[in-house]
Length: 408
Image (cartoon, rainbow, N blue to C red):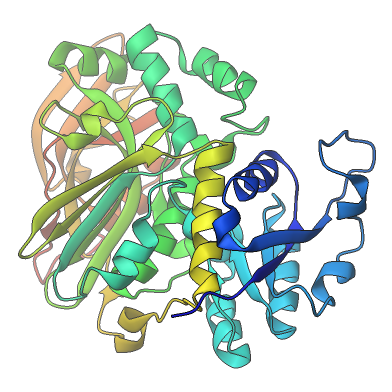
């Protein structure tokens, strides 16, 4: 197959945009060049000739010589306006904006089909790990059993500093912000939303499920307390924020983002700092593990570059699993969890289907047990900021009895 020349209109010239400029200079065989860069800040010094820059997005969107729009801005709604306008103008699009994709997933699927344009976004989930195209092309819907992963480099860095350097969560967060791993408003990362957006993208390509963010439950690392950390130290665990999607029964999938204790037998145990790790499990090939940098200029730019290269060969996602429409999400399952809390009456043991361990002390309290997932996510105590919830290391989701209800 012959390779076509690529002329790029680039939106955004921050860390990743500058990284893309640099890696393109080092890959002349790609036959891709940036024609124009749309920016919003006037007085910021940039190591690129001024003639490349504009503040008018229409210069890129309406230029017939530009055949690919690369969107690398941090405003998800503005990004959607740019991406949708580019598609309506018949241009292929590459994006790294996971929130934009998650918030507008159904609209983006419709735009691709209506205007017959490709839209690639490998960099929107796990940066340097080539997971989306592997899910799209390699794993058959009937063979894939689960996908789970550490998909947010910021929270993984924070948890690593807490475990290895004994920093407090606040001190580790400040260090992550100083290094540029976390934003000044870090809630997208530490509350688990970033991981949820990436999980939604992975769900589409792993199991063909297109859902809205509200459908996926996420709890981040902001509630971790001294009791959680002490128990992890005593048992030789680490704490990781992990996104989960598991095939459940014949035609159902469960999906959520929760902190989890992991032990040395888990491949996630060695995934530290800003690394991401993704594990797939299939019916015949068992488990496979992908690990790589999940943040930074060059790791993310390399994923963007991979999409640009794929577009030069007219590649596009086919969404074969989505078109089959055989799997749907379910909340009818139970999990084994560790729940710690300050006041002894904050979390009633009667909410659990089974309690395997209870601990009470002036320092704090915890319960280990199996709980109906809907009971967990809809309880009043889950909204208490002094209640922390973690998955146990070897948790197994189990189906609910047919007569089990939320009230039970």
